[in-house]
Image (tube, rainbow, N blue to C red; front, side):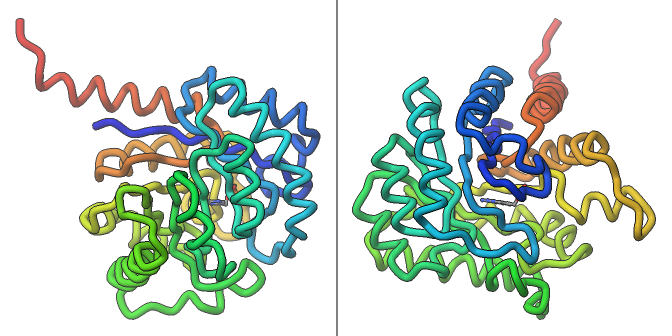
Length: 273
Ligand code: PMM
């Protein structure tokens, strides 16, 4: 069971989880370096919030936020991913040293995204997505959620191939919390092995998301960040057990510890006296 940890470096004033604390480039860079020291294999830098109801950000503003952070972190030797739905930002970030493009819309938001990434040697994360954050819950209607997610992701992998990106450069992500309500997220996680069975590497992001808080507390109450981080460490271990390639988290230290414990548990089967 090996599973990479992708640490989240949000450079937005309105991210629901860091509340803009890392808006300044210097603070974001310092945060990224800390996450790397804690064991993150990849740093995911984003300049546009995707929380439900968030407004879109102009690509120029997005680039102003993320490019100094991408180039400093890549320059320090970190593997950097750029979390963007804009092809211009993706290309500028790859030029600044990013090795992965993480598109939560799976290439659907910007019609130029797949062709743009095809022209680089970056990998691409194609996330399951059914529309922009403003109204994503209106589209949370599924026949059978795992089957629908697998089929819709497969069509995005096909679109990437048609644009010239080989499957070896593709990572798929079931998009926890994107166009999915509470129990639908648990259904997808329960069926994660079927997403892994598609073939490409799989990334999963449960970190601090609302469906975790809903499970921890009776409706209406807000679970603390610390409790969401503990819950995230548990879901990340279970995702690793289901065979995912990576987990995207805020609290890297907690998830790295949890994965180490799970690995020690598994390697017990190799113990001989
Ligand atoms: N979730 C968020 C943002 N980007 N990218 C991928 N690949 N998968 C996710 O689940 C994902 C993502 C939203 O969370 P944040 O606002 O806390 O970063």
